[in-house]
Image 1 (cartoon, rainbow, N blue to C red):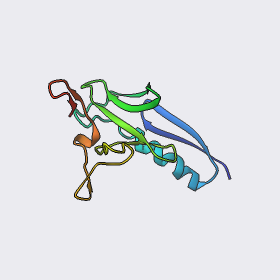
Image 2: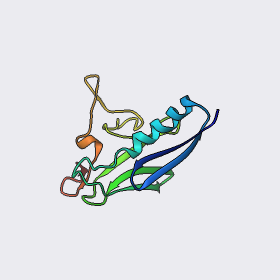
Image 3: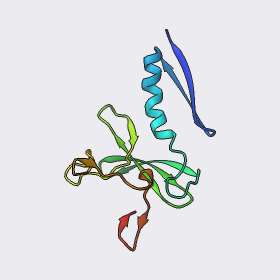
Length: 124
């Protein structure tokens, strides 16, 4: 069996994929939904979102950027190579892991959307 699927996460984006079976459809759409369904800024609720891919030193950096308020949602990459929204603070000792306090993940406010605050010299 071969399935041709069209996934439309936003009115501006249509993604075509060829899948071999229903399991493959889920494995294809799941990671796409996790990234592309974040089409509203968690800080200002704007829908003017830009997808950013850039190189920083030797690393590929992926993020969603709000053109209205300048907030960003960083995307991490799991061991399978899929991108996911990074909604938790990173462990300073191992950025691939969440920071833990009393055995619980430390979640970022605004669903992970942060904006640089020059007065605090930090993302808030």
